[in-house]
Image (cartoon, one colour):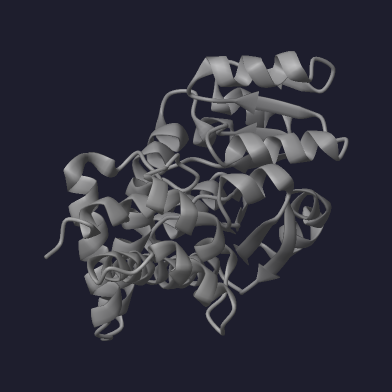
Length: 289
């Protein structure tokens, strides 16, 4: 089995595959991460010099790259993913991209005789490490069925939505909802503080009601402490929110709530918080008057 991309998400996913007994051939832009994975699993990990070498060694390769720019670079560079695609080679791409970008990848792979499945994930660093991701797939249904054991090793549930692009559409909706929730939560914490209330008690109250959810419970105390260690970096959350708003515009939908959240994330990113967790949107919200 091949794995390309060992970042915040890919590292945890790869480790889950290894724990399930899968042997991996890996490549990462930072060689140190690939070598560290091999050092921890010397009998089960082979590090190669290029993405193409991963594909040449494996029938199925998972790709987990962080941004549209990184994806295009790793696919199209000399010795990249596309260089290694030949008849029957299978790509399962777990990035979150625009629908047009994911469709382009599929067309490029299919044009070389390969097979393609999009499988963007819902979940962040913790769920990736613990095998609790949710896979939102589209494309080659037979490939989806074939990699079911690997998806089960990395996740708690998988969905198949149809043609390539459908999984991406669902992922963008999921992240749009999550992003608006985070922005509303941050404003709520700030409003409590400005009114002389103990914002930590808001977390307790919400936990007891209909809007109780793991994100508020996990992120709330850290936000109040100014702890935004990245599980889902703000720059990626903002990218997904922007793509979701653009998707709405493309089908004639006005989404003022999501557009406002995208604006809040953009301001926080421009203020230098992009590499922190997306909860860092709160740092700019606290300055609002």
